[in-house]
Each structure stands twice: as structure tokens, then as C-alpha cells.
Length: 182
Image (cartoon, rainbow, N blue to C red):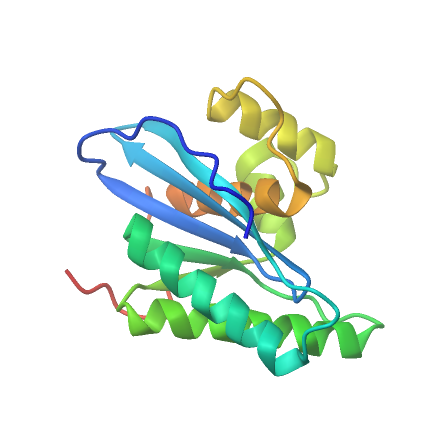
């Protein structure tokens, strides 16, 4: 796993969201705190696996790290990208399996999981559902008051998912997959 890129955390946020951008080689994660109407960057990074690992070993590594991150950051919500199944069904199926082990880790912690389509995330962060990756990264930088664009792309996407969940929680949320346990 990449080293966590963390900043000073507030004492008691109203809500913490951990976003995941699932993948079998690289899974991005991003943590955002919401206090009042302010969003604050907590951490972002990646979970990496290698091609020399078997597919079950890769899934175990993703699950183990997702479980550790949920345990470490104790989010109120976990947000994850909906997977669009286009022409490459094989790739989509493997990514869906990575998504499944992340969802399992959240369930094992009793954390609700919300899912968002890429267009929903772009609309929430940029205000335009067909925004470019660069436009999303620029807005993340502004919203979270970061010095630089968030990198790598998978971690930036995960931060965008966390921001999207933060925005969604300001209104009634119908996409939560598991009940909130307090």
C-alpha cells in the first residue's frame, strides 16, 4: 500500500466519508471530514496488488487493506463507484469482485455503503456530469484546499466519491445499501 497522505484532523467531524475507487491492480481511497458546511481532506492513497499474485490473493489483499482503512479512519459512510459494464465484460467482472470485497469489509464494520455512477460524481463535484478527469481533480483541489492536484488518479477518484457522498448526505439519501448503525 502507498503511504497515507494525511493532514491534521479536526477534533470531531459531523461526518467522515471513506471513498473507494475499486480496481484489481490499483484501488484508490480517499477520506474526507465534514464539519458544518466545510469539507476537509484527511487522507488519500492507493491499495496496490501485483500481477504475480493470483486473483484470489489480490482480492484478499484488497479486502485486508480496505478493512484496515475502515478500522483506522472509522468513517460514518463508505462510498464506492458503480461499475458500468460496457464492452469489456471480463474487466468489469474482476472490478466488481474487488468492489465486492470492499463492500464486505464495510459490512464487517457495520458501515453503510453508498454507490454512485461516475456521472453522478462528476456532477456533484464539478456541476457537469461529463467533466474531464482534470476538471474533477482541479475542483477537488479547490474544495479540499489542497496545495496540489490529488494523485494518483485512482485516489483522486476516491476523494471525488467521498465528496459526492458528503453532498448527498445533505439531502435525503436513497442509495445507501446498508442501514446506519450508531
